[in-house]
Image (tube, rainbow, N blue to C red; front, side):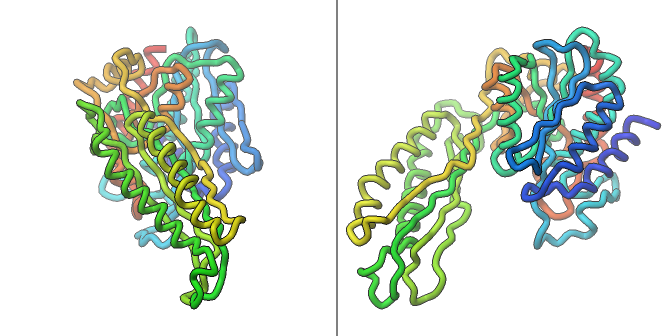
Length: 384
């Protein structure tokens, strides 16, 4: 059986686990743990507080600092209301493409790692090779943060990390951060005919969103000189606004879900400082003139640092050698790479498939992309 055949068979199994972020990923994690343990890896399963999700960390080779980690997330985005041509949780092949939810984002990379586990087990004699597969990347890199904290507590710091997000096997040395928040407004309900007697939570949520739009415009002027990101400035996006129950009722609660993708940490500090002042000095005083119990509270869903391009990046240099790339680039989407960089590990993003196919109906990864990933990982075994 060829590595490609093994990889596609493994991808078929992984796609069959419907690991949507809202649901448990334990079935898939236990499967991966069992396969890697069978091939001689030392395996740790790290559960989240609910016990319904987990990371798996598998190590081949010596139990010491350094080495290389191959990292990927096991969760996928929902398929509800998407017009799929086939069962999204059953792998189908057509015209050189492997279709199914998560095939490119990012179970294709995970399958390639598992397919080559016997080679890694044989090759990792002088330094360790880790495989780290996490939960809840799609909703804030929650598993990745827990994994890095676990490594820090163990005093274990891999020298290099390759995060296999879909880049069409291009070597990516940098991306923006991803900060996600939910801001909740508590006002005072009342009859729509007497708006002055209530505190309209939706009105204040709209004012807050208007401030976000203003800040978004101001961030354009803060773009670092020579920024290679597209767009070159930090961005803000309002993802959802919820509130109200009827035309004639003053809504007592509202909620805004929003995110920012900072090019630099100072932009995030600028936005948070401005919003805090706007809430404390403008919105809350106006709300509390009517009802002293009015509140505005912001929950931090995740604050995941970006991957900062570095002059000295051993992981980038290694991937460029393995893929014979003549250069590297940046992407606007976020990954778990910044978490490893913050740990002190050099990190790079390189994996099969295109982000253009991620999160869409009939998601796919091309077979030739899987072949290219297997070729890169096979060359990596010779570096161990």
